Image 1 (spheres, rainbow, N blue to C red):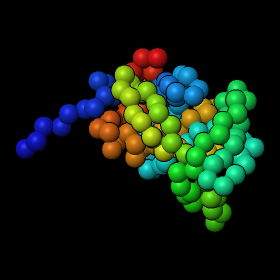
Image 2: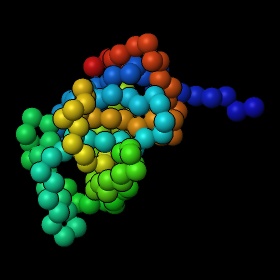
Image 3: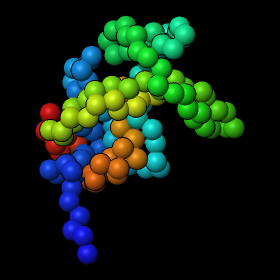
Length: 137
């Protein structure tokens, strides 16, 4: 039997701080439900060839190369095509490069970033739904 080793030092809480190279530290909801893609809040998305321009947290404008597009079922039979870009992030004392995030308007959500359950599981993380900021900020 191979022992299971957590990549993170502790279980993640439902809200944790993720630091983006371009944006600094941002509060993120950790998705504990169905598998989900990482999402960063973005509005005024404009596509220019292989890149997009968009406004994000605190109205900051970013230009990022498009990595991919994904189709997201947003309910009631509606599918939203979202651009996917990559970011270098630090999370739970670990660094990741080229982490994919879809860009979508999260202005009606409490947190501007969603870290998908698939990312957490893939990296050996577990989530303690009773806690927030369990990794420290």
